[in-house]
Length: 166
Image 1 (tube, rainbow, N blue to C red):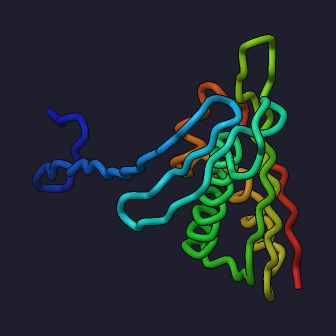
Image 2 (cartoon, rainbow, N blue to C red):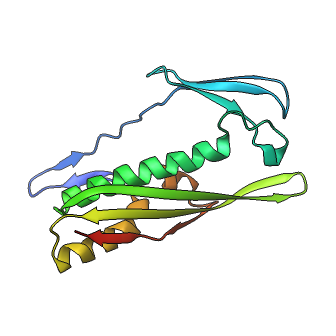
């Protein structure tokens, strides 16, 4: 009988080792909507100033959670697409992804509803088959991205790639 979470080989079953990775951060905040604070990555000591965005009554002097989510999606998606294209041996010079996050304000309720990812992939010397793989993988990369997988049940994720051949 095969165990769940195991790989079956011709002679024996090898259990897969699950790993948990932690990413600790600390947020410090003072005030209400017009307040300010910062978020610090406790492993790399990267500190980012935080404020509430002007459209929600804040100063907008720093970044905000809504922007941080869009940034996280952009970074995760772009890195993931780069890894997938490299694994598929698709020659590319670079990837640039613009991401737009949409938040619905309904009275006192705010809901992140949609993230539109617009990657621009510049291929170098790619043939027609490689360009097709790049387009296909651009549409599928969000399925491998940790961040889009974390929000997928609540937030619509749309991918609109542009593939450029040089």
